[in-house]
Length: 106
Image 1: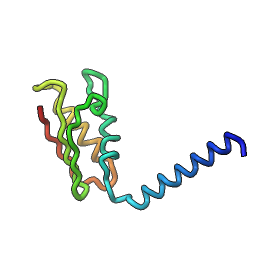
Image 2: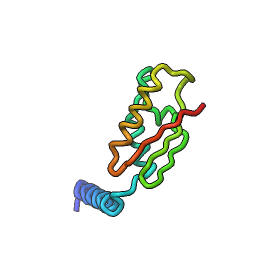
Image 3: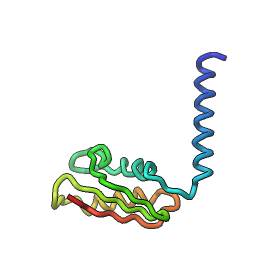
Image 4: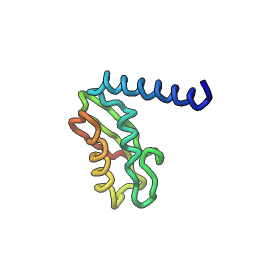
């Protein structure tokens, strides 16, 4: 078996493992899944995602209800409503999410 075949086999094994995890826990929402979706939320003034800017302070998940505690770059941020709406929208796209609540803290 050459190096390319080894790499392809390893990738297939990894993909199969990921698919099995998804099948076995398809009803469970995890913090990692939420963080991945939150990394898609971009602060429009800065142009960076809210995860890499360390704006997410806490995530709680109970019965697929998601509670997110986050901060903003400045108190009174004029785009706060837009960012919060984007957070709720992105996270609600995850399968089986019931509710998304966001609390802003400073």
